[in-house]
Image: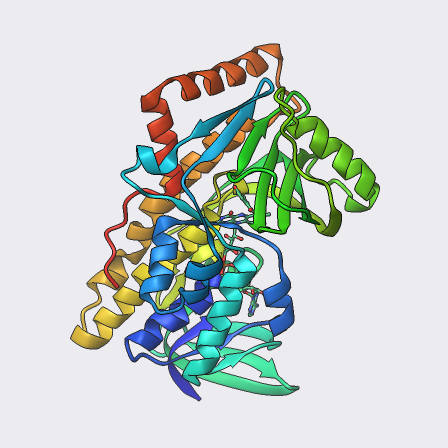
Length: 393
Ligand code: FAD
Ligand code: DHB
C-alpha cells in the first residue's frame, strides 16, 4: 500500500492534518490505536483560541462549533475572595475564546474524514516507522490480526505524548522538560454553569478552575498532588473542596450536580527540538506538551498542522522543500511562546509544596498588579486569546 502522507494518531492534530491535506487534494492514511468511541469520549480540552475556531470554520468543519460553541469575550481571575473580569475582546481588538469540548472537535473531524471516503483506521496495533531518512519512509502495523505495510512520501507523527514517533527520533533530538509538583483533579458535572465566563482562582488551599461544556454541564478542576488517587475522593469531598476554593465574598459559587466523569491529570512542560528528522514530522503533543493552565495544547497542535499541511502542499505543487525545512523552527517559535505563558499562568496561580510565605505574598501581589494595570492585563489577554498567526490556508 502507498499513500502520500502516513498520519499516526487520530487526535486533533492527526485529524486536522488529514482534512487540511484533503482540501489540497493530497491523500493520507490515518492510523489510530484506540477505538473510535474511546477517542471521542476522552474528556480533555475545552478552550479554543480565536485562530483555532477560525481555522475550523475556514476548513469547512466549523458548522457545529458556530452553532453550539460558546464565544467568551472575557475570563475572571479570582483571588483574595474577589473575581476580577479580564475583558479579552476589548483588550485584543475583538478576539475571543470559544468553549467547545475537544471531544466535539474530534467528533466533527471524524465525521468530516469519513465523508471524504479517505482511510481512517481505528484499533490498529504495533505501529512502527522505518526508513525515515529515505524518500519512501514506511509504517508497519497490524489490523484485524493481519500485518500491514504502508509506504509514504512523508510521515506525520501526531500520536500524542505517549506515542511511538518521538522515541524514533530520540538520537537526533534534544528535549526540554519540566515537571510540576501537582496535578489537576477534573470533573464534569450535571449542573448549569453559574458564571458566563471561566474563573481561574488562586486560593490559599491551591488553584481551582471553573469552566463549562454546555448550558447544562459545568467543568471544574482543582490542584492536587501529582500522584493523587481519584478513588480517595468521594463526590461529596470533591464538592466540599471545589466550594471552599471557589466561593467568593459576594457569594458566587458553582452550582452543584451529579458528577458524570472525574480524573486526575499530571502537569508537565516538554519540548522536542527539532520537531522533525528526515521525512518524519512531529506535530501536537507528540512534540510538546504544556501544563493546561494556559489552555494552549490543542491550539498549538492546530498551529503545527496548519504549517505542516502548507509545507507538504508546497512540496507537491512546486517540488520545493523550503517550507518543510522551516517547519520545525516556525512551530517552535510559537511553542516556546506558549510554554512561557503556560508556565507563567501555572506558577502564578498554584501553591507549590516548597514555597515560603514570601512566595505566597509575591503571587498575590502579582495578581493584584495584573488586574490593576491595563498594560499587564493586555499582555495576559493577548497571550490567552492567542498571539497573531500569519496563516492563510
Ligand atoms: P492527542 O489528543 O493525545 O492525540 C494523539 C492520538 O494518537 C490519540 O488518539 C492516541 O490514542 C493516538 N496514538 C497514540 N499512540 C499511538 C500509536 N502508537 N499508534 C497510533 N495511534 C496512537 N488544550 C487546549 O488548547 N485548551 C484547553 O483548554 C486544554 N485543556 C486541557 C485540559 C486537560 C485536563 C488536558 C489533559 C489537556 C488539555 N489541553 C488543552 C491539551 C490538549 O488536550 C492536547 O494538547 C491535545 O489533545 C493534543 O492533541 P494531539 O492530537 O497532538 O494529541
Ligand atoms: C478548560 C481547560 C483548561 O486547561 C483551561 O485552561 C480552561 C478550560 C476546560 O476544560 O474547559
